[in-house]
Structures are given as C-alpha cells and as structure tokens.
Length: 330
View 1 (cartoon, one colour):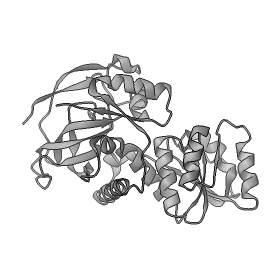
View 2 (tube, one colour):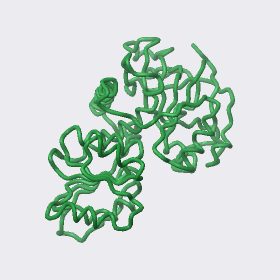
View 3 (cartoon, rainbow, N blue to C red):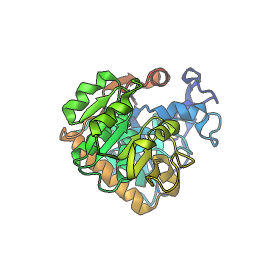
View 4 (cartoon, rainbow, N blue to C red):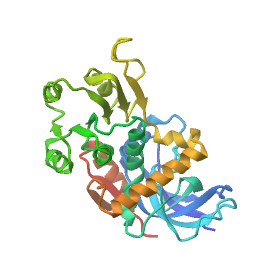
C-alpha cells in the first residue's frame, strides 16, 4: 500500500498563499475506508471558508478540500466490494484530511460511481454543489407548478438547483448577475432579476400579482434569507443554503412559514446508512443527467494541482460562477 503522498497543508491562515505543499504520511485504512488516487479536485467556496476558521476542530497542517475524484488504489477489509482502479467522485468528511492531496482516504459509503461519459474534471466539479442543490430540493414538498425563487442563482449551487426545479415543473424566478439572465431564461426561468437592483422585490411582486411564492432557496447567507421571508405566502418554505436562520423572521401566527437549513457535510457525522444510500443514488442519477446533457454544470476552468492556492484566491476574491478544478498528475 502507498504510505506517503504530497498534499497542501493549512497553516492556520485564511490566506490561500500560505498553504504549504509537502509530503505527508498516509495512515492505515480503517475497515470501511478506501484510498483514492486523485485525478481531479474540485474547488469550492467552503474550502476557503474553512481555512478562515469555519471549523473549530481544524489543526495546523490539516489538508483542506471537500471534493475530489480518482481511482481506488486500496480498500479496507469491509470495503472489498469496491473494485480497484474504478473511478469515483466523493465529498469528504470535513473533520479529517481532505482532497487537496494526491491521495485521499474516503469512507466507502461516500463514493459515487462516475459514468464513462463523464470526464474527470466534470466529476470533480460535481459533488458539493450538486448534492447540496439536491438536498435543498428535498426540503420542499411537491413544488411542482408552484412559484419558487432561487436567490443567487448564478453560483454553482443556485444554477444546478434552478435546473432541477424547472425539470420537475416548478415556476422558477431567480436573482443573478445580468450576465446570467439570458442563459436562465433559455433554460425556462420565468423572470431573472438583478440582485443589485434595490427594487427587484417590488418588481417580482408586481409580476406575481395575487399569487404567492411557495418556496425561496437562498444561496447567500442567513441575513439575506431573512430579508426574503415576507415574499412567502401562507405555509411557504424558506430554505437557507449557506447559513441558518436562528430566530423566526416573521411574527407568530401570520404566514406560518417553515424554516429549513442545508448541511451536506453533517451527513458524515449524523447521517444514517439509509440516508447515505439515498444521497449516493441521487448523485449517480444526477451524473447520468449530466451525461445525457439534461443538466449543465457551471463553466469549468481547469488548473494544475500546484495552482490550487491560486484557484482558491480567485474564488475568494470573485465568485463569478466559474468552477475551478485542479488536475493531478500522479
């Protein structure tokens, strides 16, 4: 078994330039783990947020990275059903070393098989945004034919979620930068609003007339989600994807909306085997939709493994919807 690899190590700094690339020992596999030889690594906003102190459990020399894909090169004794040299994509457990490495230890139950038609880069760009979008969709009962709003649809999660909502027959409105509006309209969005327009909520209300919004999916933060609560109708749903709402944003016994938080990473700690199975199955189905051109990921910009700090910095400075993926030559 491979005993050492090269990885980027966190130095308790939020500055991506302070990451150090150095060799590190690979621990022995636990019974339910596999070792992945990474071929591509997805870069996500949560990566730099974790480096900025989002997790209290991180220690110096932690290896960041939540998304990766590669081939299995070793398996634990309870993971013999996983075939060696098979391609998988995965989302990591944030408590442990992540994907910014030539090799990553992953729980066998977290592996999502990659179809032959899907490139390494597409597979690496997939897990965090696509699985988060799928989870957000599951929070709302029967949104078919209902008016829904995706706030911040220009990002990876918002873009995928918007497509999934359209696919099931929801009547979708979005906010995004104007550069994304034409694309969304062509995909079937009813109206796209510029989130920087201070009057966009009134414009949405005007379009809706006497109708209400059934569910709002906010990809920005908790304060942003709270500010949208009054757009919802009776028994509406407010889904906060990048944060959570600590207190009810509206008076009691009014529209009686439901509040939802999304926490993909928490499945590693709190998810049951049944929930893991459903998530992995959903991931495999979404990858097949991508292979059939029924679902589109954001524009992917490919960089090298040694450029991961550069990609993180670009994402931190301007999250413009581009998905950065680092390729690994082993």
